[in-house]
Image (cartoon, rainbow, N blue to C red):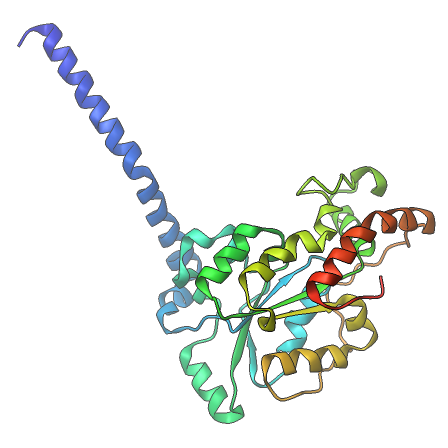
Length: 286
């Protein structure tokens, strides 16, 4: 073989190997992630995922609205068993890991059997406050669990935004003052945008049956918690149960927002709130 032909053949061979490598990288990475996150990170729970259940209801948010409190309080009900922790983030951040990874966070089928035998009903749940914010996430939930029940808890928009701002201060004390970090309604990552509930919830109402969606308010949870829990239990079709709410979760103490700034921001949310109330068929005292 001529020297130039040999060089040409070697180049083609290298290109073919490179193309084959690039072609297989996604598959290799997927296998690596499955082994790492299901077997190594979740170990026993990942290996036993085939014998575990999927959630009966999902609490989708919103952030700084009381989702952590709901996660802990609802587990007091004898028929309701919580996932291993809240904010699983499967349907938005880890959907590519598959159902076995997701199921590793939930009770076993044997646990379900014993709970049902003793209390007649068994339910388990996923609480992730970021699920509310993405159309893709809503579609992931629907395509995986089309009949799952959806619960969202919402807080007066300005108070929610201010609470998130003060939560951020815990880890970033150099952050700018509140009015400078708000961003605008059109920026998906801005603090204000996260309080635009209509824009987020409309995807869920387009996908899920209205009868399978329950919308609650943080203010109602604070003022009359048992009334809220009774609504949830009725929605989930389980017996009512008195919940002990003495212990508080994820509290964030900070100085009040000045009334002028709050009133100005509240006016900005007026139209957005009206769209929300029409969508959900109820009105909150915001």
